[in-house]
Image (cartoon, rainbow, N blue to C red; front, top):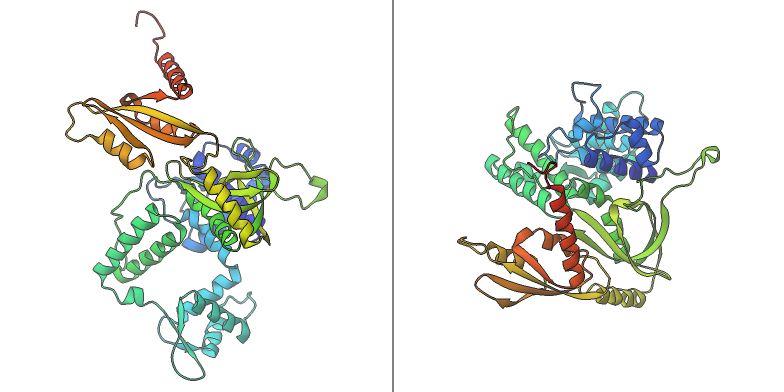
Length: 441
């Protein structure tokens, strides 16, 4: 898949997921910075991907594509947001060949020439036939990724499917493994590979159980779909960090109206994009579990340390490497700047003091337990029977503010005065919202 196409469809799916059908075609096109024609073309492309993976579309052909995304609120893994990763990894011709090769190997080990014959017999008549070199290349790829193994013995070599993980387990063991992978894929990061393994295990259980329906034992209500899409950039960024390479990308700030801009291939229709091109040396990738957001922190020449949200990044490209010592020096600067970051803030360090009130009549002091488990490096400095004081030094008050706010009336900000005043103003605004419309109510 072309890089631009993948970026566009990632942003397209993100919009469908987060808005859940709130926009019409024109509003979608305006928000993404594309034409309505491109919107319709992208919808057709995504439906083709659905068809290639599921082998069928929903019964109602005229169904809006965004209905697929909100078909089951709890079912975050099956596998609509993974279609692009499947489509990106292989070309259509490769998908057909590999599927035929794996099908032929299900029953017995085969040689390269036997697999070539099986592949040529199974391909549609309008597809070009592969040669022996192509089949050997496909087998080399399947061996490298661990799907196929080369059997011991002399030439001609025989290849067999590595499906011991599935065939060597009982139905009960396979179900236990599926449940484990399901939990890990939905709660750990990164998640795409876990979802793909989960999908493979589900198919294996269906093959063993026939047409028996599978009941999903777990539901994941607080699950961020968009984090799956953001993983498209995680592995390239991690590779660039390991290789000490700079990266260039087009960035669309979340505060801007447009979230994507197509590449201008026709000079007659050239237009300015709202995205800005950046070149950075990535140093760290950070995940905000509270809001389901990925960030990359890196060094920008002339501007120092900067941070970007992965959801705004498109057209990511690796650039030249930097010396190891230079990377180490910049990483040390970043670690010092984020020493007191609640998440990624690099502002001025400030001391925050909060009085938390213990719950009345509760068997467990869940307020104190939560502060100790979520309060990072902060400490409890004073304790009384009714309350305790928590202190922490953080870079700015923006990122810690939502956490403190979530305690509601169970806490009181003591310092700094700026944060205390901000909370006071917020509560006044909330109180105004709930004022009666008429005085006699």
